[in-house]
Length: 121
Image (tube, one colour):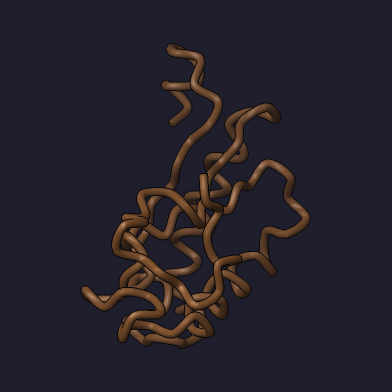
């Protein structure tokens, strides 16, 4: 990432990860300590590039868990909220971390029961 900042002037980095990776394949589970530590290292690497760099935490699952869509027979809204609550608890006081809850969501397929889960554009 640092070379993109130094050579190309990039100052916002999207850091994709899978929901399954962060919870160790346990839907609704706690963050897996080993996998979470790896992701925290990635976020910290991003944050340490420069004080004007922003890092987007991106759960890159297209609002799904193994194909099941959130709130439509797949994961529940509560399970999705639990994941983001765990993540936000760690980074809530870091203004340079962006919670990318609406990135790459196929809104034509997603109809969550709680519309606050998405930042509709």
